[in-house]
Length: 205
Image 1 (tube, rainbow, N blue to C red):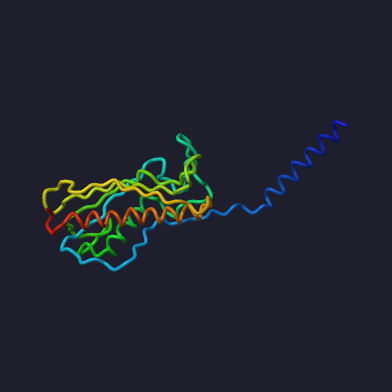
Image 2: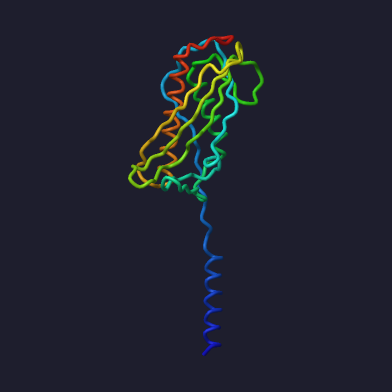
């Protein structure tokens, strides 16, 4: 009787192993974080801008989508992730948005040669889907921006902590990615409006 039980257990283990081998691996889904600017560009100033380093808070600097489950618990999604690091996407998104805005005579990306009147840097402090109980599920994006006068005093002449919360249509990773892009676009739109009001000039302030 004991030998039969052992044999059946071994047979079950072999069967389970075979099923595991034949089961196709779960495919990872990848997404981009990129602001989509609409509308015509504004009249450009004579000032030039360089977009420099962007950093991301440690909980959100990985590529996996992050879900906030309660006030202390967060979870990263191994199978649904950004295509590249959030740091790179935030810098690239800001560069493309401000270039399309027409607000500056020229917008230089990081690593591109040439002088600029201003340097824009940023820190992404929040980038997650909020699934806390009692809260309507939403994507949360917060970015701190710093503008340095490189053509004049060298001081920080503008800084802003801009945030957007966009409700999710459902709890799927696809809905999370779409809402994050909408929130990021809202942050960049407000950044453009704030910079337009700052009255930036060539040669610095």
